[in-house]
Length: 299
Image 1 (cartoon, rainbow, N blue to C red):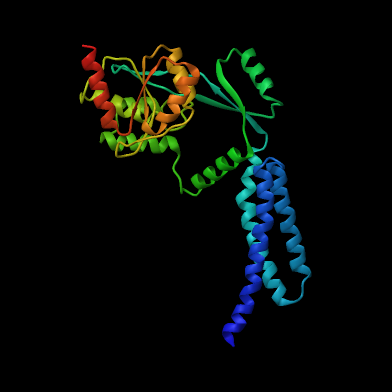
Image 2: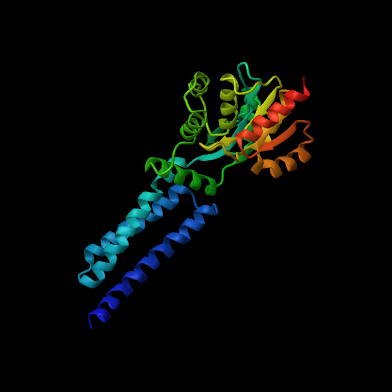
């Protein structure tokens, strides 16, 4: 009899959970598809939470109060989870700006990076482009930021707040130092700069560290982009098209990239008719071997 009674109690709870997630899922889908904005989405959750609280106060039967309390708890958690979206409201466009390659001293290694600038409350891509042209800022491209991208950024930020995910720049620094075995002056110089973002300088920093401590030499101008793990595995990076164009613009003949970006790079080169020779590696050791071979051929 107790088992039957427990099952009867659980059934309404399961139905309540299902209905809350169904309600939430519908409006989340509308947000991700761009039908509603972030503030509207959060406001809908808040209104529903208030309605549930009012119903909870007015209800007298305990069995219903239990289900409503469960619904309120779930809706409150979902509301708190989505609340940061309001801080992203109005971020509609992103521009990718040319950034001069950073020449690592005494190594001929050039770190390739792209500056990303978000624009809020700009009417159109054309208005952003006009602003950049007026300010004489060289840029690659301006694109709209989708709600899906904003949502992913929000979730990533929450993970950082909860210390469940490291900041990309901090993680890059830790991985480079771990691989090299010690902190180096050139690493500190790099991270003391302003406007550092992402983790794509990891491979270049590690190679620079190896050269400066005398593990090998390089006399060939080589552009480098790629994230690394603490064990030296080379990990994929983003905005590859822009990085290839930067290497081309500044006359760098070679560009080392992660192997996982090789297929994408081949397509970009075909589209852009780039003359940069792209070499791909999956581990730092492969990059060292490539550079040694390139220097041997140039002696």
